[in-house]
Structures are given as C-alpha cells and as structure tokens.
Image 1 (cartoon, one colour):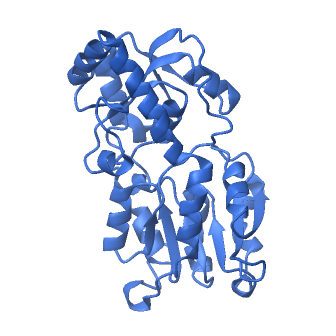
Image 2: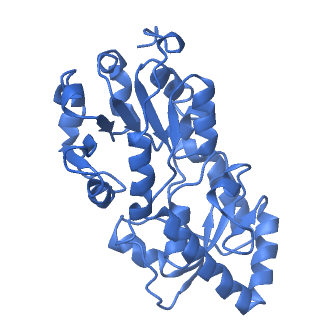
Length: 318
C-alpha cells in the first residue's frame, strides 16, 4: 500500500488509559496513516468537541477508544458523524444484570447510524449483530513488551489478580470464595506495567474466574504470556473460539471441585505441567499487540454497513 492509498485513521483516546494501548497504535501506525489524539480526563468528557462532520473528508475512519461512560451521554451529537468506529472492551456489561450499564450498550450503538463497534467477545458480537449493529469481533490483546516470562522462581502457588468488590464481579467473588475453601488462594492487586508483570511471574497457578462475565478478561492471556499455569472458568462457546484446550494449554473448569482435582493431577505429573505452560506461551502469541494490530486494521478497513432503516434515529432515553 502506497503513502497515497494508505488508510487514514484518527484515534481518539485518553491519557493514563488502563491498559495502555500506545504500543498497539504504534503497530497499527505501521499499516496506515494514523493520528493519535490523547485527551486529558477533562477533555475526554467533551471529546465530541475534537471531532466534527468535516473530519469524514479528512479521515477514512475515526476510532473512538474511550470508556463507554464518557461516550454514552452524547449519542445525539455522534449521530451526525460518519465513519465512526468504537473500540469496545466493556460491552459484556450489556448482559450483566448487576451492572448499571445492563442493556445500554445495544441501545446506544443501535442509535448511531453508519458506525461500527469492535468487540472483544464473540458472544457479544453475535448479540449486537442480531440487534442490527455493525459489530466486528477483534478479541483481547496485551502488550508483549511489558508482559513476558522472566523465568524466575515462583513463590506464590495459587493466586488471582484483579477486582472483586464491584457489583459487576459479584458472581466472580462468589466462585472465588468457594475456591478459597479448597485452596490456599491469594487474591491480589497490582499496579499495571512492570509491577504487574513481576507479580505474574511469581505465580505458579493463575486462577481466573470470569464466571458471569460472558467473556475472558485480558488477564487470562497475560497470565499465559508470563508463564503461569492458567486455570480458567469454562465459558461455553467462548473457550473454543479463543483456542483454549483443556489440559493442553490451559486448565478449564466448571466447578471449584473440578479445578482442585485437575491441579492435583498436574502436580503429580511434572511433564504435563511443563507442557501446559509451554503451549500456553505459544497461544499467548496470538494475542500480542503486534498480532492484534493486524485484526484491528482489517476491522477498520472493511466497509461499514449502512442500513438506515434498521437503526433508530432517536431513542427516548437519550
């Protein structure tokens, strides 16, 4: 692709984004002409002031990479803009009844004509499509320059790293409480970046509990990349699409009891344990920023579906 024909993309993101996607956009920028606009928290609240209908003439796509809570109130303004693509990492909350955003993602995206939502869950993607939304599955990704296998001694046998206090994670917490009765599990938190990578490298079995979320969180792939034995909840439909293979590159479980039984079996078979870790590291390579940039570029390049009749122009709740 020549300089003149390269896709022109404006990315609107936010400073101190977690996770930081700068390296992802570095990779994407090698495939297109990319302009990255990173807004402060105050600027992000009025992000629509940084785009206007004339931008459709200057760019082939305008990628909005902002938290849903910031874009949700401004549907009416966004309807006037063409070529919008939304990088959506939290849309699983559309289906979580305990979430304050239950049902609101579909209502929002169905109200924005000539736009596309990039989703990280196959389940969510299909649900969006059934509602007439142009949705494309791109999956999760992690920064391979930060998350690596340091091959150091691991002093934490069983651990989960992440949040449990939010009502969105109530089902996760319930399952973790059950596991705590069976394993000496540590529930930990960490700052992102180097500190987080070091913590992952201290863990032998990363116990992931995405129960009730409908998709696998990025921590699953980060744990694989750091050389942990990933033990992750079996999410129907999702695990096959991701590429998880039970007792080959990850440990899949449906109940805490099944998890414990499989861990006991692995502990008696060092060769199996080493094989699961090695295969997990290989699988993780499919979710690096570099790999993800290829999927992202294709999702941005494909024509956005236009079907005015299937997309309501006004919804009362806005």
